[in-house]
Image (cartoon, rainbow, N blue to C red; front, side, top):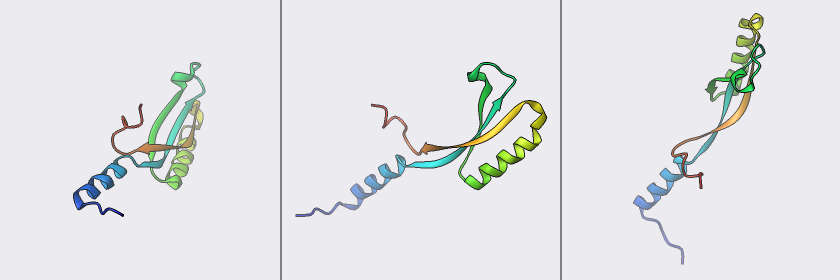
Length: 89
């Protein structure tokens, strides 16, 4: 026999699912070629939700900083919405 969730229980379930949702986002990353240590040479400059914006921002930054020894690129990653401690077990 199927059970029907009460509205309050359903709301908790939906809230839990939304809190643990993972969304694709795009990191705009700078690689400083003049710095020798990898930890210091790589910087995440910003995270954006639009791939088109990430691509255009990378092109803009590469053009703007071409003579400064830095290269910009984008990388797809995920952003977990809500409590990020739920997966750390």
